[in-house]
Length: 97
Image 1 (tube, rainbow, N blue to C red):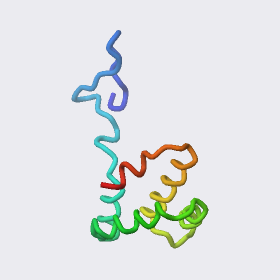
Image 2: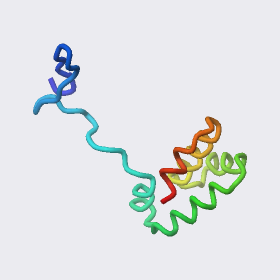
Image 3: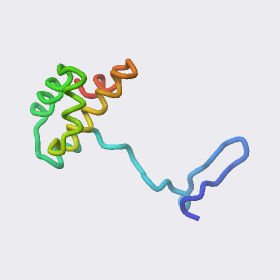
Image 4: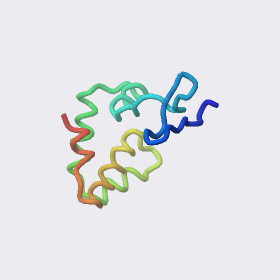
């Protein structure tokens, strides 16, 4: 039964002790991933993010597509690139304190 959602009419899906989601919790922040994987400090993370958001759009895309770019930096680059294509600033709000 685990994984199947109990559907209550008019109330939607309900969780019980037997009916729990497969992936619990929130996604980790990019800084948390970078800190655990690469052991960088918050100041180093901020420095890299500040550098990346000042680059031209084409350079950010090139950095994201290079094979030697760390995954957390590639994720930041892709997020910035996609947000600029949409004209939104969600990534900047989340990355900058």
